[in-house]
Amino acid sequence: MVPDPERTLAEGAVAPWSTGHTAEYFIRMMAGLGEALGFDVDTPWRKLPAKARKAILEGCDEQVHVRYRNRYGRTRSYYADFEGVLAFLQRKMSQTESEQMKERYEGFMRDVPCPVCEGTRLKPEILAVTLAGRELGPKSIAEVCELSIAECADFLQRLTLGPREQAIAGQVLKEIQSRLGFLLDVGLEYLSLSRAAATLSGARRNASGWPPRSVPAWWGCCMCSTSRLSAYISATTVVSSKPSPACGIWATL
Image (tube, rainbow, N blue to C red):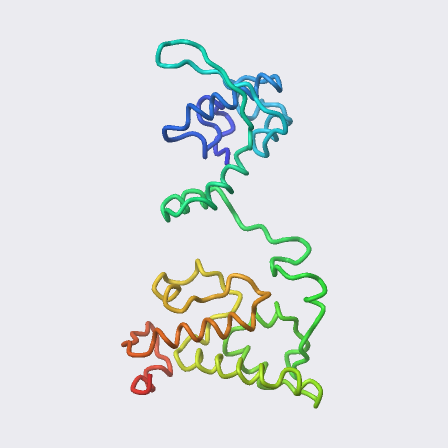
């Protein structure tokens, strides 16, 4: 966000606000914030008070007084909300439809796992429910999603269900095993349901809709992804980057 703390705000210390035709606008906004908090835009970032840095990054509750000169050289002013650079990036990221701009905004972001769910996006109550495997031990939905497709298929195959569990989950489990079997047939045994979409090639990601973006919809996403992949592969010549069982069943696809 601030690659060079020796730079002043006027010199573009805040990277997302340092380029383009809006750079001057943001300098004026920060100057207005400086009037309210007692700092100057010609001060290096590292010398700014902690309160000023926090306000620039996270925003200010009160409106700031922004001054500027119009094309006739006259000073004009207005009051405006100061949302902060973090909220600015989130807003622009959600609004833009340009892939180029999304890549630019993502350059200022990084993934930080939630300390409570550890990045699974699941409530503790959901994570407390486990499936008891014979050899791999009991696993939560999040832990099952971390397995490769091959490991996941094997894990579910080895599950032993009692009469009650069979009545509840038998049909669902059968459907999931069928979908996982298809993924194995087309050579995707190395993927996992928790794999980030950004780590896949664009063609594979667009064709299969893989992987699901969130774990809570694990069962449904597994079915949805394989259905879309199956529909795509039908009447399609598959070129694999590595040997796979798909090479032997191409005539049936």
